[in-house]
Amino acid sequence: MSERTRGAAMSRYLLGASAVWMLGSSPLEAQLPVPGMAIDPARTAIVITDPQNDFLSPEGVTWGVVGASVTENNTVANLGSLLRSAKANGIPVFVSPHYYYPTDHGWKFEGALEKLMHTIGMFDRKGPLSLEAFEGSGADWLADYKPLINDGKTVVTSPHKVYGPETNDLALQLRKRGIDKVILAGMSANLCVESHLRELIEQGFEVVVVSDATAGARVPEGDGYVAAMINFKYMASGVWTTAETVGKLSN
Image (cartoon, rainbow, N blue to C red; front, side, top):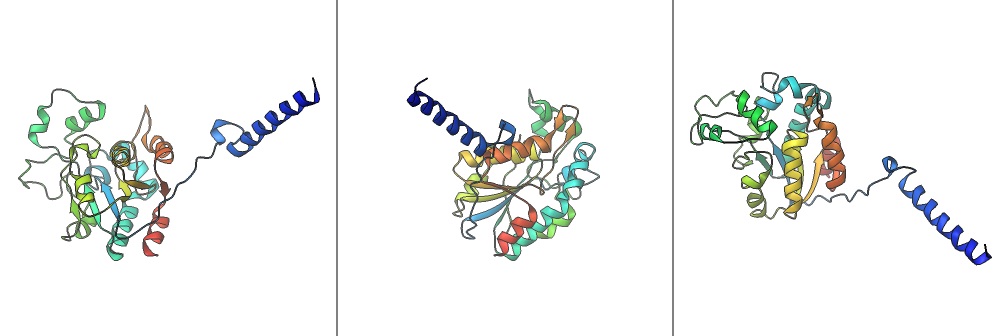
């Protein structure tokens, strides 16, 4: 091998070694970039999906599969902290709820979780124009959040029907207020939160997710929270804790 050939081979080796050093010795050690997001109060909003009893109360119909994750993440308290911080710092709050009306039970097909939700009566309401039996139901807000959500300032969008905001007016409501930066939290991590993240990104919003202000179901097929955290790190501009988020909102 000539000196020139040997030198070229060594350069390729060093370049490859440098790339391995930068990215880690295996794909599992590779470090994704963290774009980050600067909070501009005039352009930033908190978006919370499904802060409702059926997800967050021990009396809710899903507590058996989400309760452990909600408890471990301190999700209920963390969502409350986000809401209070947003109100104290003049950051608008948008809630994207999940409601099912009697006519929704006439659907001819569902995915696995849709079928489960319809079967157990999750988020059920008597009708789109009726609040009969709503107070304290699974579709109602968690009691601790009611004063914060029902303050006349929080924007409650029309309901999303499967997981994402494609079927409601969230994007419209955000755009009409000049919002293009979103701090996203709520339930549940790998379903409605992840679906909202994906759609908002596709719609041109800058989005970070609050990692401990969400939770997921644990079923034999896998841990929804773990699955969501992996995808959040791939897609979001950042994944913050509640403490980090509250600190940023206060600055």
